Image (tube, rainbow, N blue to C red; front, side, top):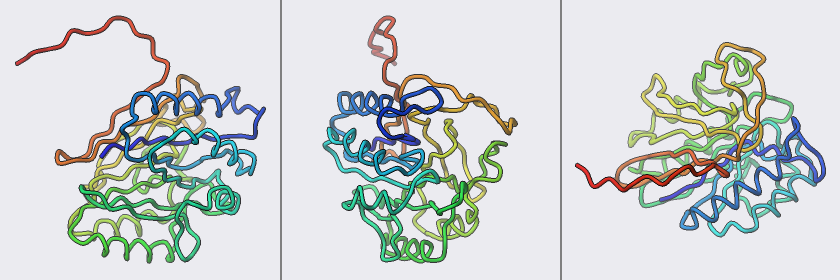
Length: 266
């Protein structure tokens, strides 16, 4: 299965900019690149902070930009989003009985879980008992399948000073729930931190983040106030198959120097 992960698009209403960038133009270029080079993708997942301020005009812009995508789409909420405005703009996106933007999808290589860590008024994430209850049922329903988790806020220790107080506040409860799934958690995929990160939790669960599609931080692990930077639009290509889980970074607009020769090996 091929999944395109985009994260932290931070759209603003048409005509506005953010940190001197045009997030809409970045996303248009990224979507065009993904559609051209990965037309065989099975799913597009945008892991939160879809819009910078939860503006209805920005969500309408997101619908327009995503229109060329021909595969299935799952949109997750981040701290910059607004659940009411999102649900009005995207009524086709699945929600739980409690109104959270959570869903699951069964594939030949395990169950995919899409979780909602957005909490109104919080920069950090929340994962309340209602969301945990849904997750317990989704894990039970997975049976003997492993699961792959998509969420905005990292539920693991990321070690970045800037995000020390704005991670997932209920991370231990969420991780305990995931660790209890006997068939295993194949991977946790998240956004929020605007830089690439990969690691393994104390429970032995692998995790990684995507690079932000819009503005991103210059990586400075111990700096509470790191600097924003720009660059080409970026996304990840995730492959889940009989060989496990793999995530590849992709970048639109890279300059070609020369083409490498094919290596016959060994």
